[in-house]
Image: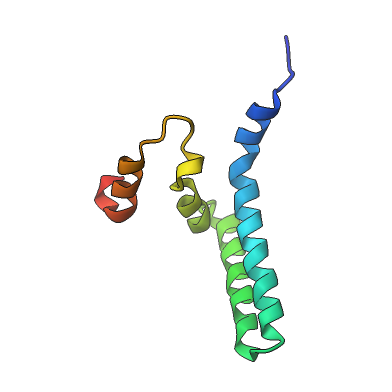
Length: 93
């Protein structure tokens, strides 16, 4: 049995989790830096952290659901009009 995985297959398997960590990390880092100038900005980092804990405990992820709707996460057969329709009309999903 061949267990090798191509780079493209590996990227498609890992992309969603990596996207979530990238967005969450960027928000946390930016809010911590902004917290140096604006004291209340550090609360954003706390909210993102609480969201990550909630996602782990409930096995749901609002950020992941939003990122999954982005066109580049839809594969090679992406219909732009359908994507816009789904993003603007919640009942279309």
